Image 1 (cartoon, rainbow, N blue to C red):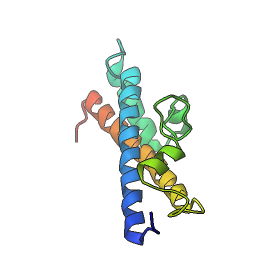
Image 2 (image 1 turned 90 degrees about the horizontal axis):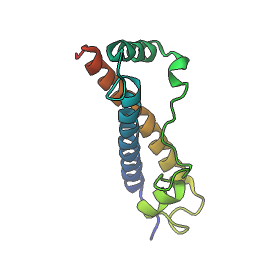
Image 3 (image 1 turned 90 degrees about the vertical axis):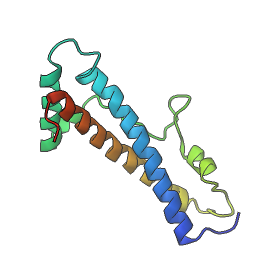
Image 4 (image 1 turned 120 degrees about the vertical axis):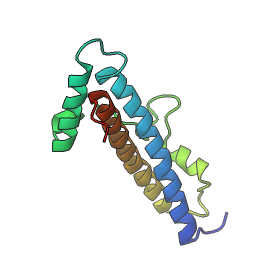
Length: 132
């Protein structure tokens, strides 16, 4: 594969961010189930309100125990940098120094964070009865 144009690189970065955002949103669904969703038998509304408060205030305690998807490959189906390279057709020819892959990894991870935060906040607002 030949050298990639700036537009092609931007498109790949956008795709990586979208993929990360989907992974983050999926993780938020799981966290919501354990925090204020279907797996919670009491105090779901209050727990959702606490999540909203912590997120609004940027409380670092919110992140205690939250494990976001990453590119470690810890679990069998988890993506890795190699997965991103394969999915987006990067190789030694079009990314000899790995700079494009580094950018894709960063975009993916930022997408995870954005997708997780947005989805969890939305779910918490719904549970708290605070749909705006």
